[in-house]
Length: 261
Image (cartoon, rainbow, N blue to C red):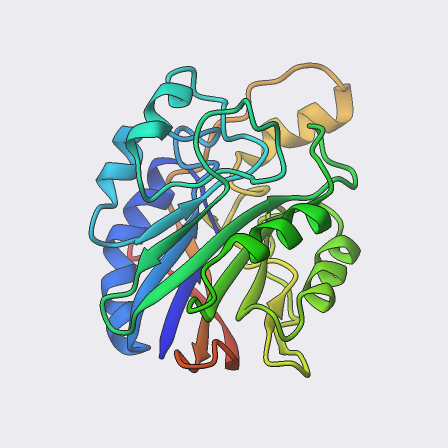
C-alpha cells in the first residue's frame, strides 16, 4: 500500500499546485491516502476552513505546526474540520486535536499524529517524546499504520524522534523548514524517515516568500512584510510504501514536481 505526504503548502499558489498535481501523482504512484502539512496554506501563514475545503478530495488529512493559529477565526473553525489536526504537545486548552484515526478507503485505518519540536522553535510546547508515548498507548491495538508529522526546526530532534519510534510507527516525516532533505531512509524496525518533506511553494523564493523582502528583513532586522510567491511553484512530497497488516514501511522515496504555471 502507498501513501503520499506533501510538504508545507504555501499560499494560493501552493493550493493551486496541489489541485493540479496531486490527482496525477496519486494515480502514478498508486496512493490511496494523502497527508499534507497545511500550516502556511492561508496567505502563507496559518490555516482557514475555506482553504482546507478548497482541497477537498485531493488531501485526506491536514497537519499543522507553530503557525496554526495565525488566522484569527481558525480556533473556531478547527472544531468543524474532522480532517485537520494540530500539534498534540501544545496546551490541552487549545481547540482541536493532536491526532486522529482516519479511514483509508483502500485498506483499513491510518493514525496520523502531529507533534511540534522544542529546539529553536518560537512557541513553547510540551515534550514531544512523552506526548507521543501517551498517544501510542491510547491508540486501539488494531491500528497498525501510524504516520507522525514532527514539525520542528532541528534535524537532530527529528532524527531522534524517528529512532525513538523505530519499529513502532510506519513513518516519521519532518516538516517546517520548507527544504526537502536528501536523507529519506528506511530504519531497521520498518519505520520510514525523512528530516523534511519540503514545501509546495515558489521555486524562485526564500521558503515561499519574495526574495528581496526576505533579504531586506535579514539586512535591517526590521519588521517587513514578506509577500508569498504565487507562481513558478514546486511541489515536494514523499511516497511511502507499507504493509497494512503490520504497519511496517518497505520504501520511502522523494518527489519534487514543478507545477504547470
